[in-house]
Length: 486
Image 1 (cartoon, helix red, strand yellow):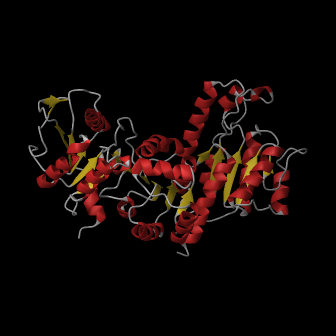
Image 2: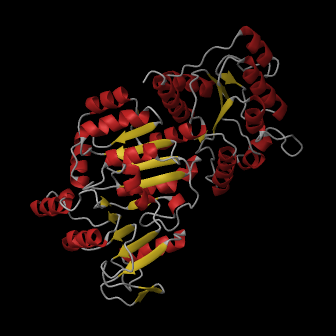
Image 3: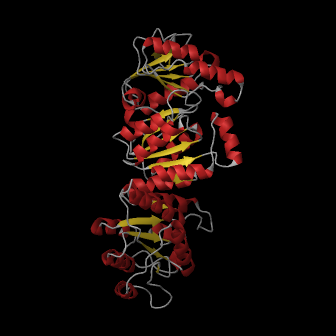
């Protein structure tokens, strides 16, 4: 038998594709998908299929799958529920390698008719053709020139993070959010009802995919629990798998049943399973993205020792609490390191223990540089987290800190974390907090986003809170510790 990677590769990297169900209406889903592929840059052979034939978007439209000039690698199906089975039969007879069925109205409806239609659909799959869906948003594969529906404007830059989602909406949110967290996607797939290709197949594919270094998943209920657990163990032994399991509360379980017809399972069973197989469990969309970003930027992190540098006594106290709750309690610095830090800190009010309190959020460049270099040189931590330091000159003005200290003639701070990363090799994490502008000035957010992108493009992960940063780092450290024992 051919491998899952060989079977599914034509869907993720097709040389030819058909969109079945286009029309002259530019806003019908089939037509918007055709336009999305063109605008996204699909450079293979592309064929619209419309029962009326004619021409769509300047391309010849074929009246049926049978009339296509070749057996395409993948067919994107936007057809009514009642004819989907027949269209899949046509694709199979034509020799199409894979189909993506966007159509809903099957077992997720909870109706006898929907379940019967899905049972009939399942009979079509014997390995000669593979299907993703139905009831899904499809595939986003920048390297293969493929985007999901409605992904016309998604990033065309490929990355190393894959996401497998039973939910179409969450897969769309992920495609849009990933670049804001500093990473790009290798593959994203919404697989819906998993009538043929299921979560274990897709996880196995991502495990074999050379472009993917870390895998995220959102699942509501696996179709084959034993195989899924076995595949999770195998893939997680080679690359991180971060799993967000939906439907672990009574209300969530009811929603999962009506969404994709899935059985949710219990919180305790899933926590035990994911721990046993070496996967990383997360419990929200933000935690998923935070953790994938940490794996992207700090893949080999296995050192629990973190040095925290922040401003203000209360802030350093709560950072210490956050580090402890996350499982990464801050180690105290040695007397020698504290002496070096004391020589660089204000004489009154600052604190040279770990967490380090530099007192005010606008230290001089010389002071901040010296503090970070002293911590890096100590060898007492493996990562430094910088929090609540106003790191850009425009932010200091926009947030009205310039009334407390001059800004124009001072050497500036924003590249100090980047220089430290390059010169010392120590890992650096930056926290850029939100909601700190009393005037709600959009310019503050514009500058914060610029600064965030600047750090991310130079290899430094950025988080909006220290608590989220500590939690994500702990997931990476724990995975790398456990991986050595898997």
